[in-house]
Amino acid sequence: MEKPDRMHRRPPAFGRTTVFTRLFLPVHLFAILSAAGTGACRTISQSVSLGLLVGNWQPHSLNDEPRFTGFGAAGATPFFGIGLTVPLGGDIGLRCSVGYWSLRDVKKIEKVHSLTLYPVALDFKYWLVPDDRISAYVQYGGGVVWGVENETTPLGDKIRLARAGWGVNLGAGVDIAVTRRWGAGMLFQYHFVRFKLPLGGVDDFSGPKIAGELLLFL
Image 1: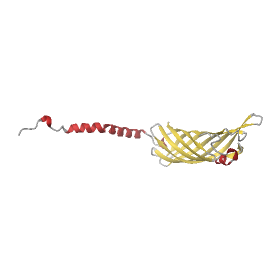
Image 2: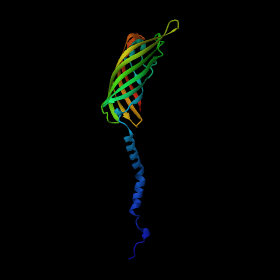
Image 3: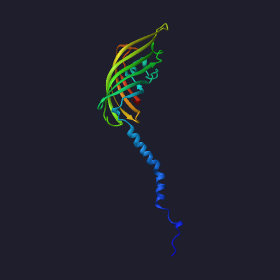
Image 4: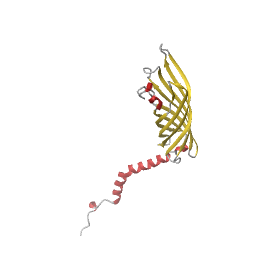
């Protein structure tokens, strides 16, 4: 019998290996890069972080007062805040923050046509999973709240009154280290805020706040 022609033989095994490699090489590289990116991320509790908060703060008393019926429709702005968190060691950090919130366009209802609050707080932050890139946490502390009331007199003159209040904060949230430099988070917090003298006819601005946070690790 004649030997089969070499040109009609089955391709060598390394040909199949080459095709396999070409098909799965992108997946392989993606897995390697993902693992490298994960290793580059720091754990939450080891990093000084600067956070930018944007959310909603809703004082309960403004819903109950007739002059402010319809919270939000009267021109409440989102809550904006910026905070610096410094690890103290282990699973505890110290957070210093300042915020801004305003209620505007109320002059048709009341002579007070805008209220603005600037909370300045110092909070302790307790991470529940400090050695990971994702960690839930609890946060508690307090601070002062600077309130500004802008009034319009019957003659049309504008009066600006400012006074200080005090506040206690209690909240919880989650931090996520996405890369070595950037992260994200979510915070739910309850503010207990009181003023000795009323601001716009209200001395209690206590209420819940929910906010998203963009984190920059320094």
